[in-house]
Amino acid sequence: MIVSVLTAKWLILFGMSDEKALIAVPPEGEPKIEGNPPPLSLDTFAGKVPFRWVPDAEVSRLGQMPFFIEYLKTSGVFENC
Image 1 (tube, rainbow, N blue to C red):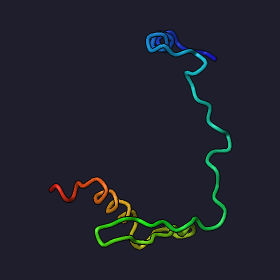
Image 2: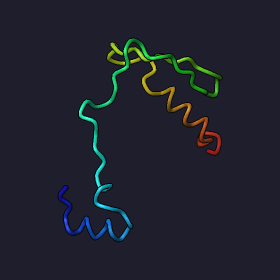
Image 3: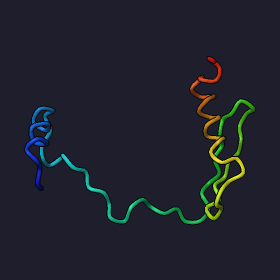
Image 4: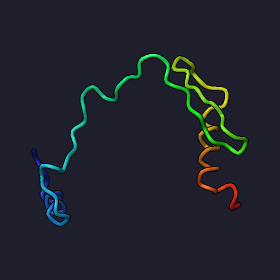
């Protein structure tokens, strides 16, 4: 493994070895999910909302909004405004 001098100095400074400087990425990438993924249940202000991914769809009716609403409810950001 080739490590630059500057990188080697930082590794020594933080107590790391050259062997752990880089993390190998699997060549096949992320695993593919066969079939339809299981439905999710998101917690919103109106209660639990079932959400299901459709792998073949270009867009969904609600987009990423259910996840954003769950974030607002969980973090309390909306309630503190």
